Length: 549
Image (tube, rainbow, N blue to C red):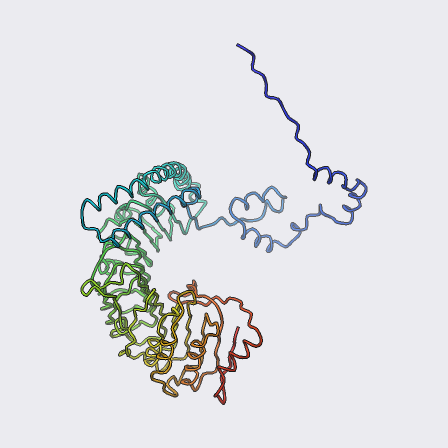
């Protein structure tokens, strides 16, 4: 057998840049002189006060914080606060290519469903043929996705086991207040042990479990055997709570969130048994109910959120402590009953091609605003977001009067919608003090006919006698926008401030149900600014303060 020859080694060729750097390098004496002038070896950070050093440590992650112990004795002796909130997600392990392939898989499925609807397939053979073509497209992607998932879940299970199933002395040293687990439903052998260990042994106060794919089940009654549980907030996504909602664990909850397969429609049972519950959220539920009646006279619920659920109409029959109600998703009719403490309502409705056809008549589904304000109590704040490719709000007079409404925020108004419905809604708010309107300039252009019809109907002087502030976001100086602002100014004798700016709206993280305007910088030409301001103030003897930015 011939002797193996070692691979030849090649010297690295020096680049031209290396040669130029070497030839232009400063001599040793010059570097020494520069070092004397600049004391680069002096540790100035360690000489800072301890309070500032602790602030620096507080901005670092756990691994970097521990690494700072090797810098000096002073860094080693600094007290370190370990984090009390952890997020263990399998998405952090999956590579970016997995997410790209998954997105392609979802797009292929959406195209298949759209094709069935467009062609109105009823023949079983035609449906089967298209299904075979679709399976031929996604079968290779599915195999690759499953391979990525198996590899990621092996690492994820080891990671979570090493964290949760640690020795008792480690658990006593590291308290955990908030824990979030995001896993895949196909590998569910360890889910029960993880939930029980986190809540019962680690004493987690805020626990969230997100399961992607298959829906799982967990029996909350097995936690009743443990004492001194500190669980206050429970968030389950695609994990059904297998219990009658009468166990001791849920009676201590103050916040509960159920998403996707976790919600099975037992609203009244949940509110009746969770006696300490103050915040409740139901999201992304495909469980269809034509009518949902909520009756919980003994409930302490203050905040209720219904996000993108398949409900036809919601009856808030009795919630004596309810203060804030938020409803998002498809247009859902609302009826208010005994809710004396309700002061803030937010409705985010969007009508898409999936829910814009009336099943009975076969025409486009439209709604008058009164369908969302039936028997509404005296509110202080109302936030509305009505969106869609075509206008689905009927410009009818609002029968319910908001006699005490102080603040109205209408966001993401499409520019191709008629604004008459906004004017009719304002006519039902005699005590309004603050009006915020955000215009979505990304939609189609408005026609001139709709503008004239909207701005000339029902003009009444001094209609909004208490309005003091008007904010219009997304203002770009178009004629119909200036006409809308002038109309509000004519009807508001006490209006003192008009703020016109370009920006977008986002959820206010500090207050449930509120929106905040994020301004965008726009440079107005002097001539354009003067023309807009002159158009707004013409005919006013004492115009309000106008801020244009």
